[in-house]
Image 1: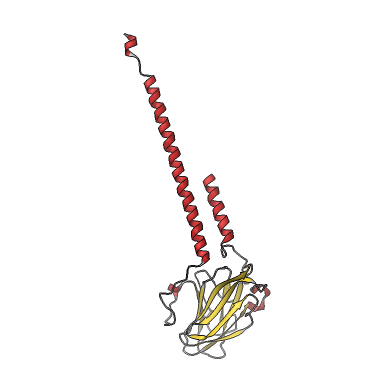
Image 2: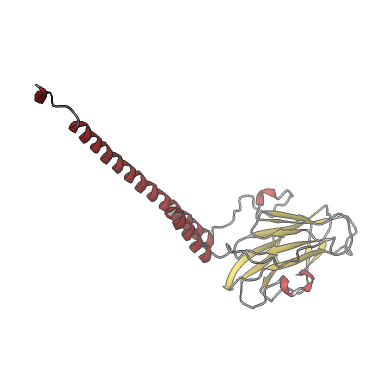
Length: 252
């Protein structure tokens, strides 16, 4: 029981010091008409079929983990021309974004095939409706970045495809943190690109190493105690056997 308590204590201490391991409430409504994907988690969201209202031609990006270096890519299936999309706070809800200017997490937006397109969503800034144009084989990338402040409320970002600019059936698609599942043809993404190891990851590795070290040391101590007790028991048994051997000379 002592060993279990030590392990639990170590994990609890490190979970308090590693940003992004503490859950926060979802910034999105419980029931949404638009499919959603989660930043820093392997997830995919695809808009519903056909052209229709905004809640049909859209996906939602949730950011609920305060960790930098997470990536979500947005692209369009079944398209042959430039398509406009709008990005904004979900239904302009106050709970759909952080409430303070120093909120602990920002999201950088960039067009992979167009370096001139670069924007940032940072706490209370950059959440008004903005227009982006995705060309053929274009990918709009969202990357999380840790900034000063406490991350107590996440982002719920509504990504809407503009159907008025193109009547051809299309679908928005968002893929988060799983480069292997990007099933689209684009030379913009380097297939060897990997997520960099962040300070948070290093801290987690240290926590795991400490737990493993405690387990190894505890196992060594237990083995030593058992072997010591076994040797003492054997010595006592030998002494008892010697004392119980009858004295044949005394009987004669």
